[in-house]
Each structure stands twice: as structure tokens, then as C-alpha cells.
Image (cartoon, rainbow, N blue to C red; front, side):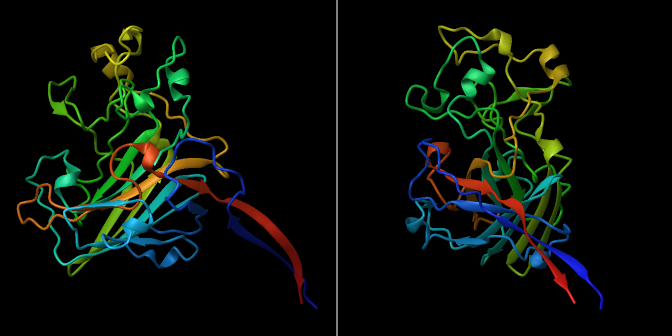
Length: 318
């Protein structure tokens, strides 16, 4: 008689109350399950334990989302994670794919694709962490929401050529409360940039007729720094949004530390998802649909919880 020990490991959501962060109460909470054996090949058949969410223009009223200009695409997305990376997958059913690389290179909203909106810090004390000498509520500064370090968009375009500069865009929050693809940044070589292409991401897009599937692996290490930040020494307490300009020293130092939750398992982040449905052959802003929320204000997003891998049993098999 042969005895084997079998350890079953499952991902379950940590049961904890949501902090009072003003997140959209209509938004359904999302669970990011633990990944095992995912291969980035454009085939999501190995995402068996992922939580898939499907939304479109006809469904977002139930989630607190919003549709611009009546998009006809239907988007299904999921996220998973392990100790090495965050995994993002999506399937989009569309009647026409518009991905014109001749549109503005940083304007991911002018081409078909999907975007994960993430707020990793998910707290209202980030200003204290980054500006310890004074506190400013940048989440509601002068009635306008601001973007901060730790808030970002993972934007993947609907093209099989994932080496193109117009895809794998990474807009991030900056120290001055803006998003890195809202303003021009002068790089040391004199070129103008907005946002950036994250070369460490591994992404694959498979197009089937007018539908497409996206898989992307985002190593945690790739989120640790961003090129774009304002001089933290240039803060004027009387006018905290008027931070110092970028300097050569700033650019050589390259970045800020991302405040990833620690520990990751069981923690919560802000989340929503966006699908661009541009039915214009030349590209350009046309139509889009957001799963939860109606814009860039993270107070209108929902929350995601990283499931905790738990060993729940040890049985002898005969």
C-alpha cells in the first residue's frame, strides 16, 4: 500500500472590511488570485482559477461604470499574481480593430486596446509619505483629483507588434500630482516624451478576425521606478502643486520608489478597467467604456484584494 501526501493550495480572499477611502460603493470588489504556470502566449486557457469580468456599454450601469460615445466592443479581463509578477489578461469582442501607429505615440486613447487602472498605495496618507514636512490632500486638490506615485495605467494596444513604441504604454502618477502622459518631459537628449514604454513587460496579442486576446506579464521589479518625477526639493509649501522643474540631476537619478503593499497577499489596491473602441480607420478619440467609474478620479474606482494562498488540507491517498 502506497501513501502519498497531497497538499491542496487554494487562493481565498482575506475577509477584512474595506477602509473608508471613498471608493465607489457600486463597484464590485475584485479578487486577484494566485497564479500557477501561466505562459504568456496569447492563450488564456491556463488561467483556470482567474476571476474573469465581462463588461460593455450595456452592462456598466450596474457597476458604476461609464460608456463614451456608445462603444460596441465587449471586454473580458482578469488579473493574477505570484511572487514574481502581476499578470493581466483580456479578451475583446469587436466588429472592427483600429490600431493606427501614426496617431500620437503617447495617446493610447486614440487606438484600440485595454487599460488596467491601478492605485497600489490605496490610501489617503501618501502625501505624508512623500512630503513629510506638510500635508496636502492631493486626492481632492481645489476640487480636482490628482495622480500620485503608486497610481498608474497598464495600457496594451490591440496590435500583434508589441515592440512598437505606441504599445505597452505606462502612464504613472508623478510627485507633482499629474500623470506622466499629460505633460511633456524633456529628456537629456532633448527629445520630448510622455509616459513611457515599459521594456520589462512581456506581452502578447493574438488577433482573430476582429477580436483579440491580450496577455501581459508585469514583473514587480518593473514597477519600482519611473523616469518622470518633479524635483522633491522644489516644493513651495504655500503653493504645493508648483514643484520644481525637472533637472539633469533628476533625470540621472531616475525616479521614485513605488509603495507596493507589504505584504502583498491579503492587501487591497484601487482598480478599474477601460476598453478603447475606436472605429475610425485613421485612429483618434472615438468611443470607450470603463468598467467602474467615469474618469481618472480613483475615488470612483473599486477595490481589488490579493487572494491569500492557504494550505487547507493534508490527506493520505492509498
